[in-house]
Image (cartoon, rainbow, N blue to C red; front, side, top):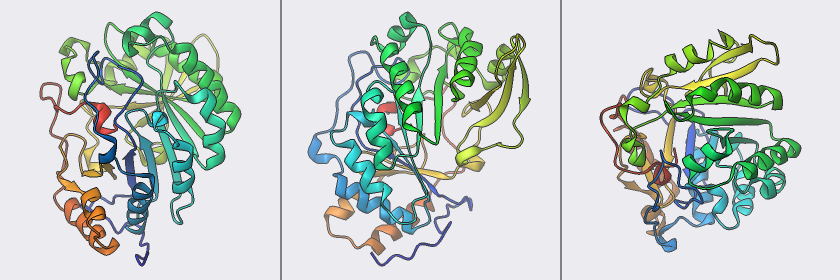
Length: 339
């Protein structure tokens, strides 16, 4: 490949430097979370339309050549993609890629944590919406809490550089567990992250009354914990979370907590990421459907320079902020977007 890597050479119309690629490797998932997809599931794309491993690696190399230094593998559920450890190995060997991470529901993590770490995966985000088995089954529509907890134990033993727990907070569903989840994370060396629900796909069916803002989360947590902003690690990893420290009033280890507040405290001005769907469509913003198919360009024989130019041109149309709020929904399900 002839592209010369130039840090921060991918810049959008608002002069935001893009160095973070969220890479969906499948639209399939073994859960049916209430905020992500309907109970009956969704139509999945034919396998022939998915990017192959070699195509994913090829396109990732183009992005790295444009200055991307961080890649997060998403889904659907990335661990259901057959041969996922092989793909991790291919991506981890790309020169210039500094950070390779994955977001997972953790259901298959117990058996895959060690081989994924050995293949070069550095960091994990694991969904954990509750520590209550019955609630877990209601949210995920699958009885899997014990599997996720075993997976977290395996991930700790495998030696990942960072393990974060992602919790979508919903009023009347799990908002009474914030203190317990924070303490669990602190006791096990994890970072807790509390996420506002977003009106995307199945998540749009959540009632407005179920929405919990980041400010409400902090107020709820303050009933049991002393809170202070984490000024030293405000945006670790360059992601959207704003970090705080939570010390239990009853004693115990201090938790580091990220609040992801796409609705109530928009962070669009700090956006440094783009998304590539499992079928190769570039999605410049989470709230808008992408139009540029990098898969089609690649399969038509386009050069790396032509693909890079197409990516740069698409970034010139990236909007200044998302186009959804608590009342305006995005039709695509989160499982198809990659989060």
